[in-house]
Image (cartoon, rainbow, N blue to C red):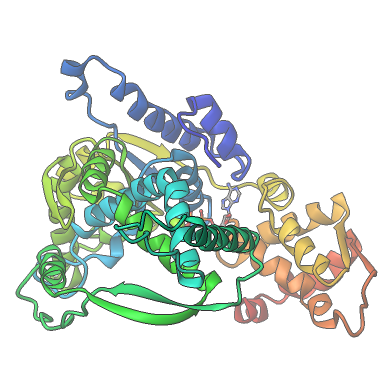
Length: 460
Ligand SMILES: Nc1ncnc2c1ncn2[C@@H]1O[C@H](COP(=O)(O)OP(=O)(O)OP(=O)(O)O)[C@@H](O)[C@H]1O
Ligand SMILES: [Mg+2]
């Protein structure tokens, strides 16, 4: 899907296809996304001054925070990484340092730019590859000897040459339409020398310099050319990669990717509440949590980070953070970090009615997923509208009574409802059967879930 440069309203519309409700959050991420494009079209002196308005999404578990981020990534057509704050540790400790999110972003940008360039050179690379494969099958005739005897007419060599050309053309055709895909040929592959990776395991270096070093050593080692016997189909794949790599200017890719990451990169930091120091008592993990927040500050604020593709400035990277903030509150984050996320959006708690729509409408709605599963066995699954209402009501009630896990409850309820059917297909419920889930069926199957609290707590 190429939905480059959607307007805010179009972005919201696109998000609406997957996420029910949460209008505020959608609106804000849509504006932020569009603003990236707007900034790039601003007169240059002002451009550098316009900073992204980072967003903090606050909402209970299972109301769509991560889902919004995931869908946004697809829409953005920009380098996008999603990280979990709880995965990071302070610099100097074992674990991922926060700068790795920027390195990931750049790697992502490189991938995007590279595949775009690959697409551009694809045709040319394919031609070269075809020639290589053809040469392996029917080697072309060597150029004619320099001294051609003037006495004899050139009749003989020419026919040979013509014959060779003809055969080659015939085989070219066969290669093109895949007739020879299973034929084996010898190809020469440039093998990257395998440097002793893992030699520098110690904690003396940061990740970036370690990768740099490994790459440097890899480049220093002579590349080994290796002959391999492979099918033409395989050869095509291997050679295409090699040839398109040869046709692409990697320096250009790096440069473009760095610019792309700097100007349109988006970093989504999920579970940010997990690094907010909730209980202020004692040292323990809180020290390191606050450390991670402090490490985050310069990155969110704008600083230069060293990556294996070069320095990247984070000033204009858009950061979106999200957290449930069940225990910790946004105000438990260190003030400097709070200040870096000026836009706060609260996601609403989902209602019973929302549940009904979530079951039914999104493109990836659970009912659609299950329908597809049954369809694969040629069983038709359908739900009456009342049944969907009943499922929504049950899920909502369980959330109230036991624990509110938001829309995730729908998954547990649906699997409880449909598990017996899933088990009985195909032996008991054969192909071409129709299952219509009714309100009564739902009430019957799920009765135990609500009534017997202790038991359902155990089951769920
Ligand atoms: N508003 C919604 N519309 C459609 N589906 C939703 C919505 N909210 C949640 N879901 C579904 O519920 C599941 C959990 O949602 P999601 O991962 O976005 O929760 P979250 O808000 O990130 O929660 P947590 O704080 O636990 O990470 C997903 O499968 C998602 O598709
Ligand atoms: Mg989440």
